[in-house]
Length: 452
Image (cartoon, rainbow, N blue to C red; front, side, top):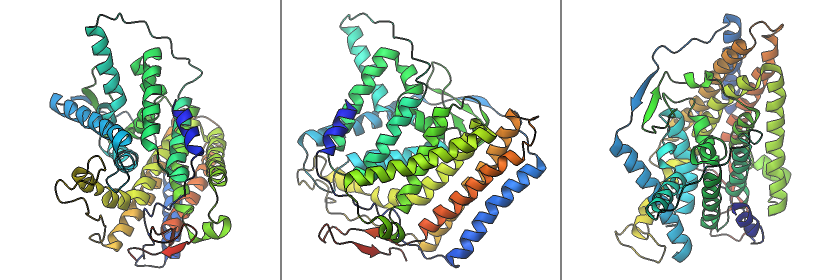
């Protein structure tokens, strides 16, 4: 059903607007100096871990932690309220800055939940509105005396591929389509998810097929609090930060998923630069779709090629910190700035022109954040993610193939990939972005240099 909703959206003309997630930030030193220094830092970190032959060790501090029941209930309520709010606006709402579908899905979800999942713990386990809706529906059916049924076995061949396909479609919606009807897509995806849960079992579908559960769960390998491993969803694992990257269970589908997530963020930055605009202009929807999936396919192909040399698990473990670094670097101002729209939405919850609390015309901004501080955070996030990725990728590669001839030389393509990605993403962050101001005609494109 979600695929049908997306197909319907294709028939609706929709302009593609630049996110404007970050403008051009002037660094204290010339950009070339930062690019060279960052690339050198990643290269030296790889050289260090390879020459020192860093090995994996068992985390002696791993233990179980029980999350308080009120916290779990509170998070489940927040997720359900957010879903209901989006649906209510989709049915009766208008069009204004009080729109919450993009706010909850892209700002708080794609950026906020992803960052919390990677840095703190598996918050999506409880925020997930699809699971809450499924549990409520199951409880109602039990009250009505409807007998339960044995779910079908999840096909092993499917693996996490449904989640990877779902993530690519979500990326398309965010980066290419960017039109209305996001609430319709959410409703269709909800129906598809509930049917899949009923057919394969709630936990089986969440673990393999549900896009956001698999994506946030993969990022959660970094966090000090891991996902629940048993039926008790309040009991999570406490471990050292990033030690979850060394866990087994990497499949080709999981590596492709991480590659798509990483490439999508990189594409978002590159596609808004003046150089990209000079090369490709402002393409129609179909051409922009080809550009996006062509870029994603290129990165996925490179990642899989490197994975053939060093192992899929090593590439996956190395890419997760990079994905987090890109997420923070590219979308920090998006979260801090656009996230303030919740103040507008609270005053006009159904987009009907209300101003319940006098904040319906509040204008979000990030002028209170020093540009130099933002640049340093971006730099640390990107370089730090790559350095951590160099460590985890090497450790997993050595663990999985300790006696393979030329094992260290086989890791050079991974190092080259990381150095190239570092320089490319920092270069894109240092460029002015191409943005279409709302007050200008659709064909007029200008350069915006914000915070600079």
